[in-house]
Amino acid sequence: MGVRFLPRYLSSLSDNIVRTFEIELKNILDYGYLTIDFRDKKKVTLLSDVKGCISPVRFKDPMDYVIFCELVVNLSKKLMIDFYTDDKEFSKKGKKAYTLLETNLNFDSIWLTMIHTDDCI
Image 1 (spheres, one colour):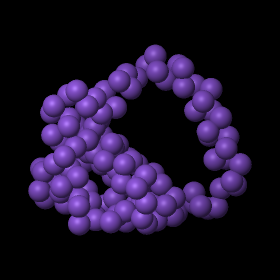
Image 2 (spheres, helix red, strand yellow):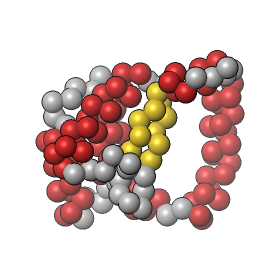
Image 3 (cartoon, helix red, strand yellow):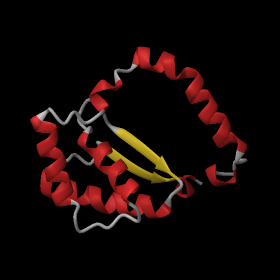
Image 4 (cartoon, one colour):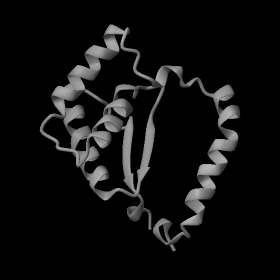
């Protein structure tokens, strides 16, 4: 049947479940390293390098750009992500931008997988 045919209420249900378990998840996962600490010179330099590298890619809105930048600045051997989205345009632009990062900044192809949910059928 596929992801795109699931009832819409499941999205709300999953949001409620995440909020319910968020406190427990914080005890298991250290989210502190997922934020960009602008006092950390290495992170700021990496963010600058990422922005310069992906500048040819035009995301449809500024928040998509910010989400992508925060996501990739935190990728590493310790944090690899399968990123699911129902936003086809974000998925397309994210894949294009990540290809530039692989080519120009030696990001590993296994660190990030952009998955458009319609492709999960």
